[in-house]
Structure formats: C-alpha cells, structure tokens
Length: 130
Image (cartoon, rainbow, N blue to C red; front, top):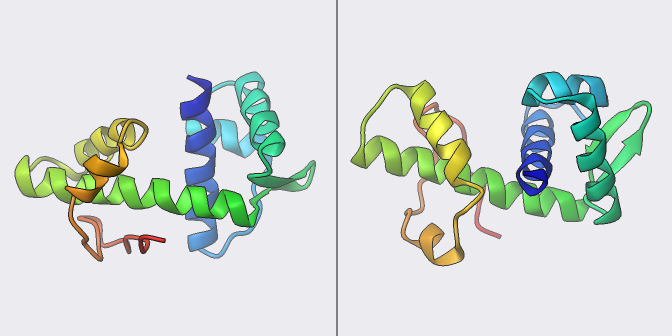
C-alpha cells in the first residue's frame, strides 16, 4: 500500500511539473491523492530516503531520479489508457481508474506489449521511453 502511495505522489508531482507548477505542499498532496496526512508523511519520508523528492515546509518537488521514475510511471499509465481504450472502449473516467490500478503492477514485458502511442485518449502526451 505504501509503495502505491509513493508512486501516486511521484505521478502527481510529475503531472504538476507538466503543467508548470514546481512545488506542492503536503496538505494538498493528501487532498489530491485522497488519503490521510499521516500516510502522506510516511510516503514522503520514504521518497526522501530514496532521494526521489526534495523540499519540506514550502512544498515538495521531484529530484532528477524521482522525475525519471515518475516519467516511467506516467508513461505506463497513459499507455494503459490507450490500450484499454482500443481493446475495451469505456468512459474516459473509467479508463483513468483502470490505468491507475494497472500502472503499479506492470512489468517491463507487459509494458512492451502496450505499444508506443504519442497521446493518450485524453489528449495528454505520453512521455518518451527513457
């Protein structure tokens, strides 16, 4: 559960950077992800320990290593959305929810079978495979 939460935080921070926002206070993270401040603090400590994020009271941002991990995660998420939309068409909200679960359990072999789309069904850019 904590691993998924850490990955969710990386994804949120990456998407904020994509939109031009550099830092996010921990209190806003708990709202964005939908969990308690206590769980967010545990996850943030783990991410700091892994040198994936930097910051503190003024807000959190990705380090270079955290950005690389987050980019892979967002790529996987968006490729799942493309795959699901092609093979199992559904409401875009449902696509997001399904991809949200699958992104955490995708192996490199699974990801290679998802294809190499440039945009997801929402029109967002799929990050390059680094």
